[in-house]
Image (tube, rainbow, N blue to C red; front, side, top):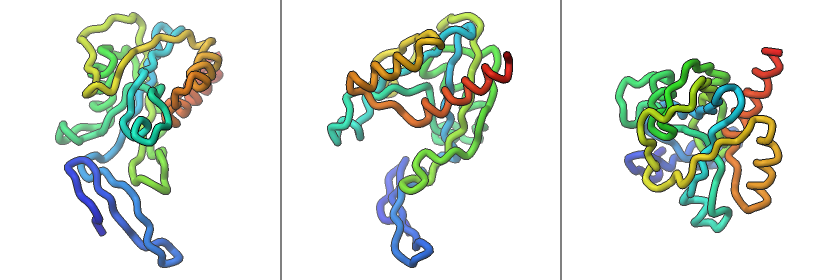
Length: 185
């Protein structure tokens, strides 16, 4: 049952196994979310420093460390996951990938709170060449930061200690990058 309805988000309820009402968020016009880990010359990763209104509203963090990401099919009807990966990488990072590897599909972002699933992809970019000016996504993206792959763990720890939040999808994408590096050794 729909409890509250907006263009991009619904609040819905359904009975749980115990019969109690379970309330969750649902995106009515998106069939997936894509998260893209841009790897430049196999040496650096491009991160986004973002201001996320829910984290600000609850006084959790001023900034969040994330990756280029977006909804599949919310604005581009008939869009495939692969199309969305390319479009979001270009839109939020201004980059085109030489190679894209989808690492996982149907990863729940927060299965107890939202119905959305995430596809995580790694975009390998041989030459860091911004082909179009990236969008700020309505003021959400405040900075793009290149970090040496070997320095990512300490950089993320520094960001967390500075009070920034880290997205689970970013950590998931980094896990798949680590697995890929081990497989290619």
